Image (cartoon, rainbow, N blue to C red; front, side, top):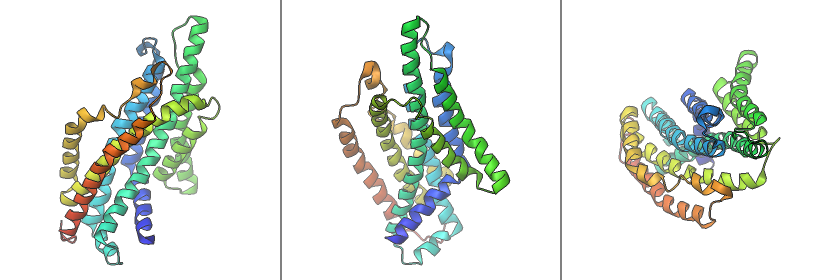
Length: 295
């Protein structure tokens, strides 16, 4: 079990150090932060725009994060031959594959927590802006300080990571990943609304489920095919699954103070687990049946 956790931890750190992972995180944050603050494109619905932008960023970029980074991680192990070294130390192929999925899921949850936190800052600011607009008669917009906290979380994390890299030789990508999460969480504190968080975060959390399916699927595809082919296969799966993804995208339930029914997340988990298990089984079977020294 110790080796399982060691592989999972190494995979999570490897993905956190991946420049593409940082780029996808920043892109998701930019969509969540910048779209709702564009006053002339809100049509007076800043709160809805903030919710839609944040949840869309979490869904689309989360799946992209899971696909690209998982495929890169698996293929790097196979193509470089390091998988042979791991399997030589009393680690079964099933244990290795499942540990890689677990590590990819850990890295993804860091991404999801970052995007969800910065989205909640903006959504909260939009709610405050809406209340101010009702009193003043102005068009609803995101509350100014919330904009600042969200932008500081996005830009400040990268800037501080650059300073740490320059003067302390810290890994830039890893430092930026940690700082983006930390600043996003800290940015929630000044105007934190517990009731809004209790409504928004379960809806955001449900969007992590399809991403976990794509992580398992991408890992299986990467065992069978090289990087480009595995990524293309995952893209085809995304297109095929698009009609089903709407069942997880529940932004509208938050309108007019609404919240997610308690039974829905449980049902979503039950609906998702078979797909994750099926792709995990497929990946283990493919890995069991191939010569890891080959390509």
